Image (tube, rainbow, N blue to C red):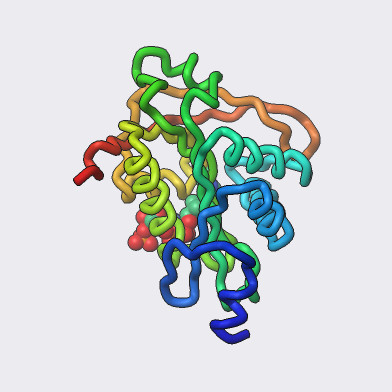
Length: 211
Ligand SMILES: CC(C)(COP(=O)(O)OP(=O)(O)OC[C@H]1O[C@@H](n2cnc3c(N)ncnc32)[C@H](O)[C@@H]1OP(=O)(O)O)[C@@H](O)C(=O)NCCC(=O)NCCS
């Protein structure tokens, strides 16, 4: 697959950034979401969260709804494609306005002003493409997009399990832990039983990214 095919394989999307053989796009409409849904986005989501520490099970419609909510709430969704993966989606990150996540707003209470905060909703990289800095690059793009949009803070919730490699990843990206605050979140596990797992929180001061 040549570079021209790689560029043409994604309709009218405008690449946000390209590095090595990775191309990152902003998905800003349902039409674009439908295109990436057919290019491995849904499968990637299901596979990334089927592993420990999450062990979660999502059907296609649930994943589509999660992504649809990102677009409809005026959040941000960025996807990455690779020439190596023949134009399949190899990573994504997403954020939504914090007010679109009432369970977190209520839980965090006065620790965060929901009117000026966004919420780091999703982040995953295909197993064959991990540890190449792809998520680090996409986190940076997501943070900058939210800062430019005028948000002051970004809230991130992730598994508190010590196996969670997102913990060192978010610290490296500059997020600050909210100490001693944990939320038990119920989700459908791979064995078909709903169980809680423990999540912890981080904050990023987006004002630090403003010129
Ligand atoms: C978490 C995840 C998105 C990281 O993606 P990635 O592209 O491999 O991450 P990067 O290559 O950008 O790594 C950035 C930093 O994160 C940390 N990190 C990433 N993977 C790690 C691992 N397996 N072990 C230890 N640290 C790790 C390191 O500090 C790394 O920097 P370094 O490589 O310079 O040491 C990916 O592992 C993933 O999709 N996991 C499953 C889904 C998930 O947990 N999503 C987060 C939900 S909140």
